Image (cartoon, rainbow, N blue to C red; front, top):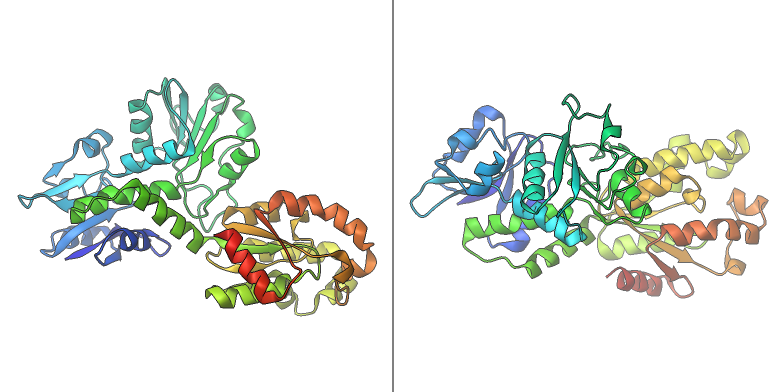
Length: 406
């Protein structure tokens, strides 16, 4: 029997990983043109399919029956055969979205909810919010009566939900709306899961609001699909374990810290130990410029270097599952801090100032090291997830990083 995901562009989907962690079948990705959908669905060895953009409504006519959830939402993301051999269209996104909100500590009861986007996932979010007691649900679209040109009429929104692709890989820099426009906001959800945290979610976190990106929804919605396909119960413990494993797998590990603190050495060893790809933003800058960093500073100045560094960060931060060693001043720019926070666990590699080398490091040679440290320390501490002191052999430091990251 075959199991898998139907869609148009699936290269970056995590569904295969999720299903094969939860179930005992092989799960594949089927990038299918619309005219090939029915033939694939009608295959006699079809065990079960999930359906994603843009086919969640396209597949409805092929179904013999829709579940109440699919019928109420008008969207299907799961296809399977019942005991009588009928093709059933279900919507497990309902469970996934409800799980996402509950996990983030966000309640819809009595709240005014603003949903951005009008596609299939928007329909799911609207139904869940209404079923869970939302006082009002408003859909914002590009051309509807409620649109991005008249958002001020919804300044009293309490829950913001993004169901659009704004901020999704590879256009991670996208920002849907400014949180400050909604002073009563008390929770933010974004169904985008790549990157793990869109700029909308980062802004919500910075404002101290409960918030979550879409990965928990993606993992949770797979659980009832696995149950439909295999008859095997998937509990919340399996959902959380799969989510934790997947998050570790796709998250980058970023090393930040003072020039000469050992980021490149430790990063390369960490990558080798874990089988992850290794990236060094300083080496990326040199490759782009065609010369060494001291030459960039001498010939073009620090701003030219920082511009090249920002380009390198924007590129490498979009990767997944890598180890990234950064330059000592990488966190000076907000755009770099935001890009690195989207898809990474950030480790501040701390080292005593008196053992920091200055050779080949223009800033360390021209600035008082203690002044430089005082200036950058708050950035290292506020941006990083964990701090590891580099005061032992590299192998020991790598072991410490792996232990604190879990």
